[in-house]
Length: 218
Picture (tube, helix red, strand yellow):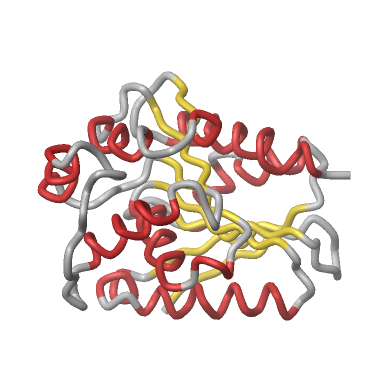
């Protein structure tokens, strides 16, 4: 099962833009509210609907959450949304990547905040190869999700869909983050001071809104 909270910009009508957001591990959909993610949208008066998603443990482990995300993307299109972004924090960003790997052209873009990026083994392999562009994934077993997702990042580093990456300079996963950041263009990556925590993620969310959403509003 997957819990969903919808925060609409307008009562009774869908905005043409929607962001689906997945939380970090052990977090709840309401944590986006208490951390100020919805408030940041309201402060900017953006015509943007937010769908806050809380996957249950079992749906993450068996990846049924990916089917739920497909359904939510389809529902957004059915309500008339012309731009659907998928975003997440830490493990939530990894799940967003898993969905995008399956349906890269179904999304307007990805907002990845402090993403979990798989084990040290895969990122070390990529670094030994000279980075994402030089790395060759080879044949990939059906159950090898890490390699599939990094192949997706290699093939789609510059879109489609466009990737917006937000990172804390003191994040404990910084070494793995840098592996991805080096594969993206400078305009795709935002760094702010801080570690792996909600106040930092709120600042990175505000950067995403200001760079990707607000300039095209109105």
